[in-house]
Image 1 (cartoon, rainbow, N blue to C red):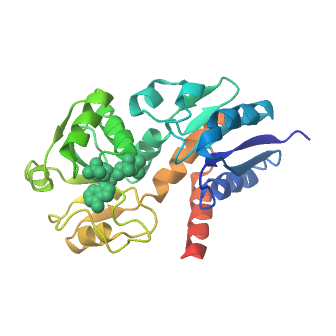
Image 2 (image 1 turned 180 degrees about the vertical axis):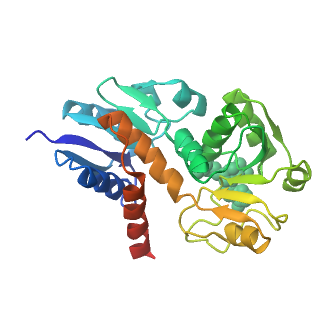
Image 3 (image 1 turned 30 degrees about the vertical axis):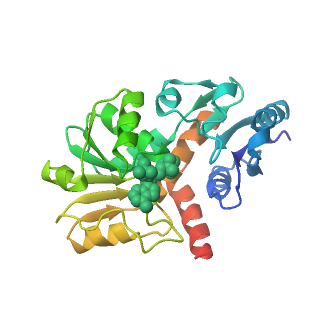
Length: 270
Ligand code: ATR
C-alpha cells in the first residue's frame, strides 16, 4: 500500500496539535493510507528540507514558526499568501503555497455566527496573526480598526496588505463603535496567562481570541465579566488545518473530530 504522506515543518515542533487533528480525521474517514507527521526542520536547512520532502513523495506540508516567511522563495505563493506575506500550507504536486489562516479565522467566525460584513471590527496586534485577520476581515467587507502597541508597525502592516483600515488607541476604537474584537497578539498566552492586552473593556462586546492555550484567556474573562461574549481560538487552528486537508485530499474533513482530538490533547497537557 502506498502511504500518502503529509505533515508539518517547524522548529521546535513537539507541541504542534496538527498531527493529532489530521490523523484523527484520516481515521474517521477510513483513509488508512494517509499519514500526517511532524518534522523538525532547523532554519538553515529549510530549502534542502523542502526538496527532500518533495523528492520523498510528500504530498504537502503545513508550515509553522519560524518558517512561514522563509519558505516563500522556494514555492509559488498564491495571492493570499503573497498578500499576507506568509505561507502555512504547501502542495508539492504543484509546488504552490497558500495561507489557510485567513480562511481558518473567517470560517470559525461564521461557525459562531459572528457576522463581520459592514461591521466595525477591532483587530488587536500587527504581527503575522493580525495580518491574516486584517486581510480576511477587510476583504469580507468589515470596517477594520487596528489597535497596536507600536502604531508604526500597524501602519506598515496596512500599507503592505493594501487594504483599507484605520489605526487608533483602544479607547478611540471602542468610542468609534467597535463591538467585535479579534485578539491577535501573544499577550496572555501560556505560560503568561495572567496578562491581558487591555486594561478594561466596554459592556457587551464580542471577542474572538486567537489564543487557545489557555482555553480561556484573561481578556476573555474580562469580556465575559462585562456581559460580553468570548470565543477562544482553537476553532481557527482546526479550520486552517481543515482547509489544508481539503487541498491535499480533495475531501473536507469532519471539523468536530479534529476539534475533539485537539481539545483532548490540550487537556492532557494542562
Ligand atoms: P504573531 O506572528 O504571532 O502575530 P508577532 O509577529 O511577534 O507574532 O506579533 C506579535 C504582536 O503582539 C504584535 O502586534 C506586538 O505588538 P508590537 O507590534 O508593538 O510589538 C504584540 N505584542 C507582543 N507583546 C506585547 C505586549 N507585551 N504588549 C502589547 N502588545 C504586544
